Structures are given as C-alpha cells and as structure tokens.
Length: 131
Image (cartoon, rainbow, N blue to C red; front, side, top):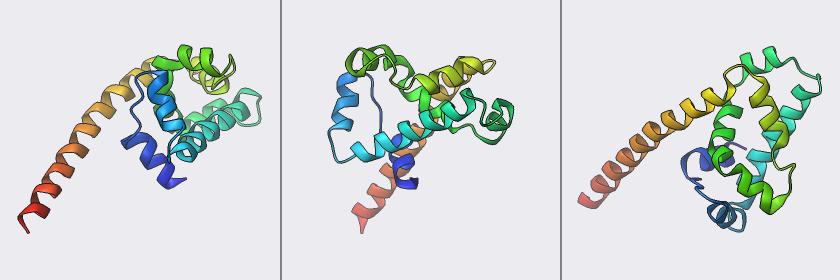
C-alpha cells in the first residue's frame, strides 16, 4: 500500500479519463486500484455508520487528497465506468463540512509539493551527472 500511495500522490497526474486509463492499463494499475478502492471502501464504512464521521475525519485526511486528484474528472470516469464509480468517497467528502474546499486546498498544496519533488529530483540528477 505504501508504494501505491507514493505513486498515486507523486506520479499520478490524470487530467482526463484518457490519462486515467493510461494509468489503469499500465504497470501501475494495481497501485491506482488499490488506493482508490481502499478509500472508497473506507468511506462506505463511514457512510453506513460503522465508523463515526467525526472520528474518521479526525484520524484521517488522506481521503481528501485521493478525491482531490480525481474530483475534476469524476464525471468522465462515471461516463466510462458507471455512475457508482467512487460514489462512497464522494458522499463522504460532500457530507463533511467544507469537504470540497478542503480538496481544492489539497490540490493547490500538492502543486507546491510536486514542484519541490521535481526540484529535488533535478538536483539529484545533476549531482549524479557530475560524478
């Protein structure tokens, strides 16, 4: 799961259903499915009352990040894969006060993180090239 999460947050950058499908039908298919299905399942437990929403949101935040990466292409995903695609996760986000806003903030935060990751990788590549 750790590798799947690292890939999802640092490498997966789907801007369209075509981008999503490239990942889905690649060597990262398991990573994509593991992360999204896990958080959709966890959200279903909250949505059905097995876990308190307050407790869940106090103990977790990653589900906002997961949703933020697919939120803008969700209508396309549902057109391609059916109306229930990631429905539990969306319901949890929408039932959380400020949930959509938190996702938008996470998208912006991730841009800064990804820029820093790219900078660190470039520095490392430059240093490796000098050796």
